[in-house]
Image (spheres, rainbow, N blue to C red):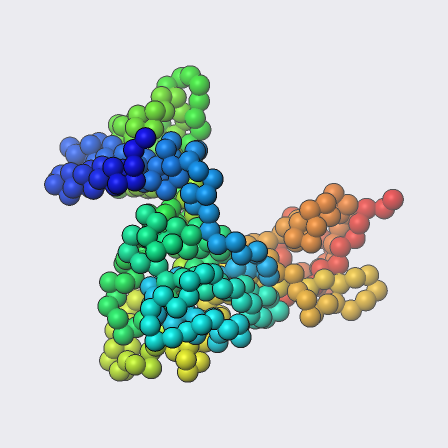
Length: 376
């Protein structure tokens, strides 16, 4: 059985070969094979021999924090960037903060209330370079981050922006894809018939039948149906084959802006997906909470019992772009949809007030819903 050091040495060797290889059409197949080899080795490094399907059950276990509330948000960052102060400011939960690094040694949860939603915020220990390989309890930190609806990468705005790239790489190495959605690729392994490869969209990023076959060969797949419904890279195709990637919204929280000049703030303003704050002085926290709400795609739906006024104090929080009444029922109780007859809906989604709707009706923020069950 190969040790982690041996596996890492193989990864370094392949990465060095990739760096030496010129990128052109002739080398596409070779680079695709090398990328597949690296993905397999990294999977083995994280999960034990055999990759994602085996290994010790503790290989990727996070901190034991029970999930509560409507949404879970993780604070990830290097030591001493102000995560603990931010947790205390947002939730009122005391998390030890000091002027030296590695103050937080375990995961500390807190809950903040915003627009009727209870949002659980996790203050995770500071990660260091090499976290995905297990350094500094990094695997526990990133494993817990994978259970969140959203990650806030907290950065010290007075420190180099290279810290942002390092954290992105650690999350990438652990299978977290930042601000991406799963590729539109149909992959169906088979028992016979060889490789069936189709493209419904012109591929301009390096994918073609031969590259797909070379990568599948590395995964010992000889029979499969592949349909590419969007223009993708070889890395995205490998992510589909691995099947254990997490696609998650991420917001960069540039903390300690009270230490910056106006000119430096203007430079930061060119970054995408970022919010400047000062957790110590409570600057710009409203915009941060607004961004969390929008990126987690949260909607408030109020329930109305028959013959009573709507319950505006405890909304049902849904996470979806176009949530249906069926999803609303499932959020209340998994068996409710079996007893569902129709619903009365008041609000922006209703054509008239109220509107009688079926289970496929799409709801909007702050709609009021009354469920009518089947008779008998």
